[in-house]
Image (cartoon, rainbow, N blue to C red; front, side, top):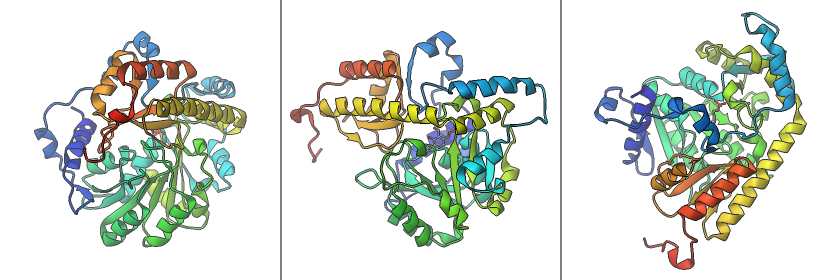
Length: 397
Ligand code: PLP
């Protein structure tokens, strides 16, 4: 069992019991992982290419169309540097900075935004320190905290699955001395719900001004709700806000690994030593082309939103509740334990999201190609009955 699997498993177990009322405080003890027993080993590495290619991949919120032509061309061009250490990199940092209207010193590259999230953890957490955020959210932040022997104060979502900003403020203020940073995933993964611009301001104004806030905008490009806004301007205001962005979603480059942080130079300087510097030559050139290719971004966005609308309309038509999403995925309440449902999809060659405790009757579905979404719809009709009023769960159950 890998350390990460052990941590995730431990987090799942510890999530069963909540300390401090609704708040779950997760201690991370390396030894306890040994008591938990075996967990399934992911099969990904062993899957054959043929098997992988044949599956409908709706499990990881990827962009199913991949990089655009202009990005492929730029990466092909950069192959001539594949044998070099120091090489022209297309000025990717300057390109990102110009894109956001900030300085080069505000930008830090990572091999995916996942590396940025881990750099934030490594910078601001230590044994006994805490990250504050909601659950469910993007688990990598909390599992990395556990790996650092830090804690996660995880707060439940509101009944409409939005993030409880008042509770985040309250928990941060009450634990001020030990809070390393606040994590806000906007839109949130796995729910797809946004935190409004007004709520972000409420949060930043409500917590002590020196507490760093990591705002993960991985799904920024898919948002339709006019109440949302990027939090990049807070960096220019001089707030201790770190924005994480990725090339894995709208730009379709998850396998190439590129993400970045936008923050005050002082924070970037503290984070930089925790990076690996492992961003490759191809993706740097590809990233420059991707930022410039606004036409492709618009096409990916509109196709994704259209396919999401079709799928969610069909599901609600069958009587299932879908959480309104502003991302390239959505959650549907299947009103039964989701794990066996996931397994049924897998048997039909359709990979869907894993369970997200405590939302164990919700299925997360990433938006794939039209063909993948048809396969999802057909499998859904086979696995789950039309939900008539009599099938609906009574409030008392
Ligand atoms: N943040 C969120 C909210 C995500 O959902 C993901 C990946 O799915 C990431 C960050 C990490 O993405 P990457 O490391 O590919 O940039």
